[in-house]
Image (tube, rainbow, N blue to C red; front, side):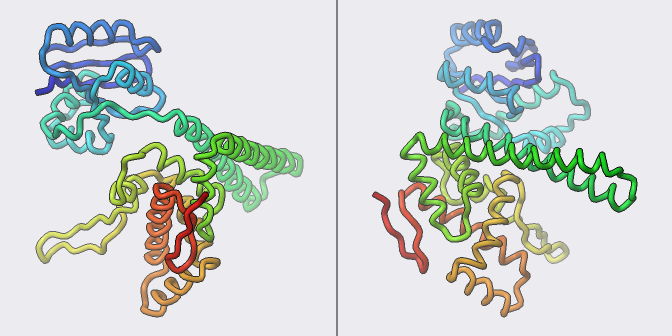
Amino acid sequence: MYQYIGIDVSKQTLQVYDGEQDSSFSNEPTLQAFNQFIQNKKRDNTEELVLIFEPTGAYSSTLRKYCIRENLKAKIVNPSQSAYFAKAIGNRSKTDKVDARMLYSFSVLLHDKDCRVPYDSEKANRLGAYINSYALLVSTETGVKNHLHAAKQEGSITPDLLALMQTHLEQIEALKEEILQQALVCIQADPILQRALDNICSIPGVGKISAIHLLYLFLKYPEANRNQITALAGLDPMVRESGTSLHHRMKISKRGSHLVRRVLYCAAMSSVRYNAEWKDLYEAFLARGKQRQLILVAVMRKILLLSHALYRENRLYEERGKYKKTQ
């Protein structure tokens, strides 16, 4: 049996509900007051503790690391799941206390396999820092380009301002390249990671940027199977039908990493041009009347699962399903 504790994580506080009372603790690096609360719970209860909280980026990382350090089981709830659950139980208000109690109530949906000590990988964390910084620059670059295009259409931008913005774009591009090179240096420092990157890059059409994103995904979720990896990328199918009155075309869920989907889309576009096997597959589906986007999604899923297999089996890719083991 477990003693569940619901925790709403914010920038400054941990709002806690243990089934009996509400408590609030400072979300500071050592979690000293919260740790005393947990130690008292361990002393007063024979049941094993399970913490239930949502991932809130940097704000929940301290709590996550605390669970690892103290060997505490936790259930880190997907925010979309908890949002739907809150609606299902009739929550009309949204406060820290309400959310902590809602997360405590979420325990009714948990099974033993859902409760485990969180996994943490220093390699994944380092790689993730590069990926997130690179994604921020890509987003900024897109915003600046859109702004310039709109300003040019309106004719409101002066030559001096245009030159200044163009310089800014060049700086962003240089910074992107520097971050990419640092990420590659980080990978090259570890022979195992370098081999894994080479295996993924051996797929025609998959470049360094796509391979780094995929490697990060595999490092972060080392125990994920094929179905779980597909769901983590948001490429799992979503069916909507009910009787004969509701029957929508099957779509992908898009509930996983949008960054992974973005690089997989670019890899798929390249693969159907340079990979003879997939080019034939792409053209065959087109000839059968399949929509171009549906075919590309199928290729994205194929690249993802093949990359995962090459990563786990330490193999290089060869066309027509042939594989070669790396040395």
